[in-house]
Image 1 (spheres, rainbow, N blue to C red):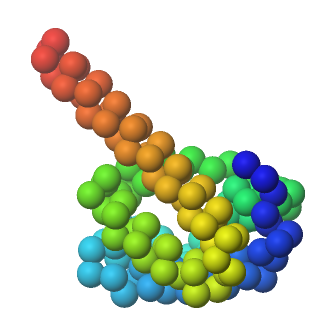
Image 2: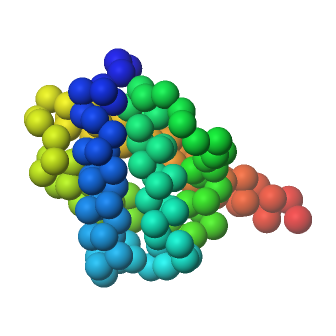
Length: 133
C-alpha cells in the first residue's frame, strides 16, 4: 500500500482519531469495550501514532502495539466490528478528501478482517482444547 500519511497530514490524522473516539465513547454498544481506557489523551496519542504509521508515516514513538490481544482483553468482538467501521468511515470521510479517505478506510477494513480471523481461530482453538479435555 502506498504512503498516504503526508497527503493526509498528521494534524488531520489526530483530528480523526480524536473525533472518532469521542463518538465511540457516546456509542451505545462501542463504549463498553473502551471503558477499560483510563487515560484517553495518552490512548489517543498512541492511536494517532498507530494510524500515522499504518498510513505510511515514520514512527516517532517507541510503542509496541498489541492490537489483537488488547481488543480481545477489552471484549471487542467481531459483532462490534460493523458499527465500529461504520462510525470510522463516517468520521474519516468528514475530515479527508474522498480518494484518500477510501484508502484509509480500506486499511481499517483489512485490520478488521484480520481481527475477525484471529477471533475465529481463537474460538476454534478453545473448542479443540475443550473437546480434548
